[in-house]
Image (cartoon, rainbow, N blue to C red; front, side, top):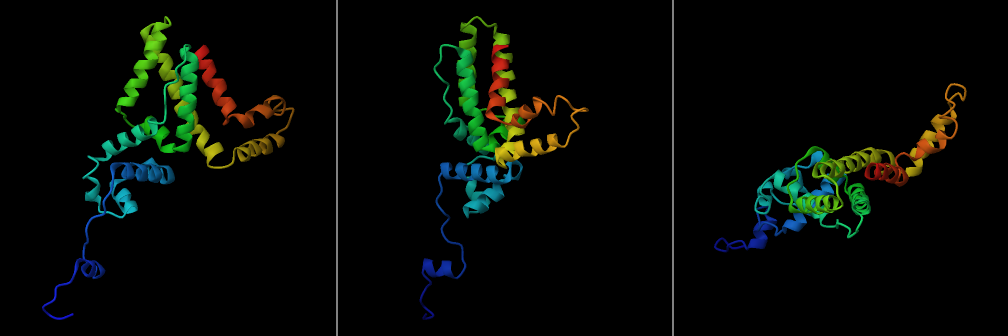
Length: 223
């Protein structure tokens, strides 16, 4: 290159100088955050790690996201978008179906259950869901306090079940958990543990399953 020639932008980039920032969308950032949280855990999600996974500087993210709390709300909003309130005349059936769908989403995205268990979510979808179910329940004659407490009893059961279920039947095959229990029970003395080595021995290995979840949720909603 002659002394009076200037380096072109591409040549400057090759020389290691800072080029034009990568163009992103808020949706890309949120989806990358969900992938990072699902893969490494919600506790490992940070703006610097997220920026690194996207190949940008941390400050670039703040052009799209206000702060980490805003990011967490956007994660919840993205996942809740796939959850519809079923149109059932019977609110029990509707809530059972909604929480079953919620469980499926939380299993697919473990960050959601952890986020609800440990964080604060103020997205509009949550308020819409609450108002819809409270209205259905009070229209059916339930006192407002009973409606609120029943909904949250069912919701916290669902969140707790997912947190229980994931390490037992999702991070390993469901059959592996059942086999582990079967192996332990087979080593027990039938005289000391007659119930566990009897009929209960066939039920205990299924306590991290859809059957167990449905059984418990039905008891809450119909009890």
